[in-house]
Amino acid sequence: MASASTVILGTGAYAPSRVLTNVELSKTVDTSDEWIRTRTGIRERRIAGPEEATSDMAVQAALAALADAGLTKTDIDLLIVATITPDYPMPAAACVVQQKLGLRTDVACFDLNAACSGFVYALDTGCAMLSSGRYRHALIIGVEKLSSVVDWQDRTTCVLFGDGAGAAVIGVSSQPDVGLLGTKLGAYGGSVDLLWITHGGSSKPTTAESIAARDHCIKMKGKEVFKLAVRAMDEAARDILEQHKVTADQIALVIPHQANLRIIESISQYLELPMDRFFVNVDRYGNTSAASIPIALDEARLSGRIKPGDLTLLVAFGAGLTYGSALIRW
Ligand code: ACO
Image 1: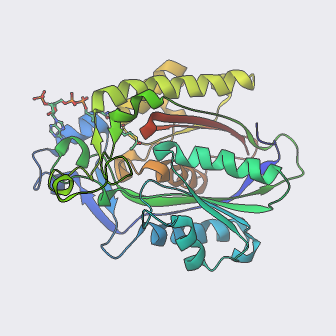
Image 2: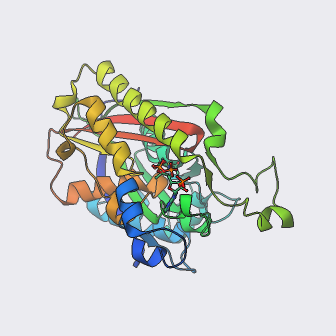
């Protein structure tokens, strides 16, 4: 478990300016605004420009988080980028972000792939590394350009995803009982085939045939993912609450992964916690995978939904199928 004195010092987010509405999407695939809204709660999503890479969005979110923390780039000595859509299969997006941000060359930089749970995994990893005493400030970024791996002819997936970035600067505080109180991480590796990109890795390298079959794009069994997502998020939330002897009604705000409003509503019912305790912005961004929780966290802070002393619960699930929860005292 991470030390109680690793704290979030600042947050930032970035969303590309291009807004793709449901109505616009319904002109290119056989869908409707009504279907998408009622099944998912999504109204629109942001789409990165053709020249805008994952690293570019990450840099914008990172600059905002650094400014919010009142720190400069020279203060950072650890960078973790959670993403499933790095600029290149190799090297890590973190190295590209390091160069674009102008971080020092003695900064540890790596990517972390836990799909939509990526930010929670990266936060836990970053806090554990800070607790070792060998790092002072870490930049944790969740970022995705999912529009680059979505099959825009597949209505069952293309309506769900969007692009964006969120970041947090974390550091060590001498104040006890604040910051990351604990996490619960896990994965159902037996369900890899519920949500994946089948080609382009070492198992099935890209071929002309795989590109023609659109096998370099996201494939998903939506109904199965839905069921497992609700189960995994409920368990991850309960586990962390039990671990810390906290009851659900002591949580001021839950920041869930923003995949589908119906999934969030199910978690609200299972935890018997009203929806006004859940932060929701899936309507404006769709599912931005690893970026979803840090974008929501930044918006929640900026809109005054998080106050000093509050307990916040982050809860996520994603391809893998990974899951994770984190309990934070502000
Ligand atoms: N527009 C119109 N109709 C559609 C669309 C669409 N965009 N997509 C599917 N349909 C049709 C289907 O073809 C089906 O038609 P049929 O009954 O004639 O066969 C009908 O709508 C119902 O389809 P279902 O798949 O049963 O719809 P469901 O209510 O399960 O909703 C959804 C689908 C929204 C995908 C839901 O299952 C879901 O949200 N699952 C979770 C997905 C998720 O969260 N994924 C992200 C994981 S996180 C990560 O790591 C990236």
